[in-house]
Amino acid sequence: MRRVAVVFTGGTISMVVDPEAGGNVPSLDGAGILARTPGLEAIAEIEPIDLGRTPASHFGFPRLFEIAAEIRRAQADPAVDGVVVVQGTDTIEETAFLWDLVLDRSEPVVVTGAMRSASSPEYEGPRNLRDAVRCAAAPALRDAGVVVVLAGQILAADAVTKTHASALDAFGALDTGPLGVVDDARVRLVRPRGPRRHVDAATAGEVLLLRAHVAMDGRLLEAAASLRPDGIVVEGTGAGNTDARLLEAATRAMSDGIVVALASRGPSGSASPEYAFPGGGATWQRAGAILAGHLTGPKARVALAAGLGAGLDRAELAALLADPPGWGPVLAGAPRPNGS
Image 1 (spheres, rainbow, N blue to C red):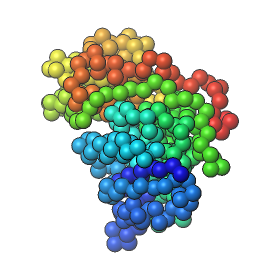
Image 2 (tube, rainbow, N blue to C red; image 1 turned 180 degrees about the horizontal axis):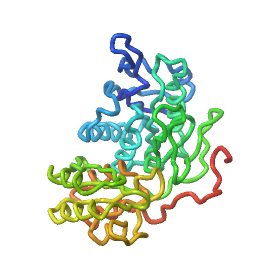
Image 3 (tube, rainbow, N blue to C red; image 1 turned 180 degrees about the vertical axis):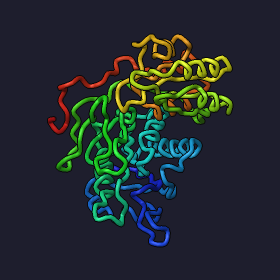
Image 4 (cartoon, rainbow, N blue to C red; image 1 turned 45 degrees about the vertical axis):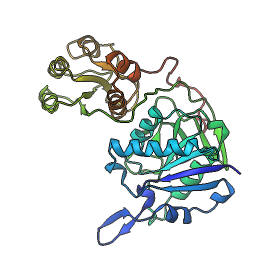
C-alpha cells in the first residue's frame, strides 16, 4: 500500500464553533481530523505530522519555510510516496505557490483544507482530505510540483486563485483551468503541469503589495517606500496601467534601490507593455519595473520576496517572475475535466 505523510497546520478544517468566542476557532489536532475522515485506510497508509493549529492568515515567511523543510524531510523518506499539507484556505494560493517555488523533489505535494468548519453540516474537510491523499499517492502526479486539491479539482500552485470568500467551490485556475479532477475515487488528469518556476531560497525579503485604483496618486507608494522595503509589487488596472503620478513615485523608489514589480489586479490575465501612455504598462517597464507575467499580485509578492531572499539580481528576479518559457494559458475551447 502507498504511504502518505500528512502535515497538519490548522485552518478551518480544524475549527469548531465556540459559543463564547462567537464563531469558529482552532480546536482539532491532526488526530481529531483523521478521526473524522473515514476511508483513508483504504487509500494509503497515513503518517501524521502535527505542526499545530494556525489560522492561514497568521502565517509568516519564517514559519512557511519551516513547513517547507518538514515537507522536504518527508519527501526524502524512501517509505513515503507523497505529502499532503492541511491548512487554512485564506492564503492557500500564496503558501502553496511558495512551496512550489522552493521544493524540487519528484514526490507529489498536495495542499488542502476546507471552506466549512467541523461544526457545519456541510463540512467538506474529510472529502477534501481523502481526495488529497489519493492525489499524493498517485504516480501520475510525480514531478507535478505542488498542487492544491479542493472540491474535487486538482489545481497547479502557480495558477490557483480563491475566487469567492465562502463558497464550497471557491477555488479555480482562471488562466489555465485545472490539471484534473478526483471523481469516483479516481485521479483523472487532463493535461500535464508544464514548466515551473524555482528558486533556492530559505528566507524572504520584505515586499509590500499595493493595488492601483481610480483617482490614485503616488502618495501611498511614497509612504510604502519610506518604510524601506526590499521590494514593492503594484497591481495595476487592466493590463498593468496606472495614474502617471503612481509611476513617478515608483520611479523614485527604484532610484533608491527598491525593486518594483508590476502585476495586473485582474484575477486572470497579465501585466503587459501594450499601453504606452504615461502610466501605461510600457512606461512602467521602461522605467525599470519588472513585469510579473500571469502571476497575481499576491503571488508576485511571494516570488519577489523569495527571489530577494535568495539574493537574486534584477535580471534573475525578472526571469523568476516572468512566465516560464513554454508556459501558456489554456486557449478558449480547450477541454476541461468536467467537459465544459
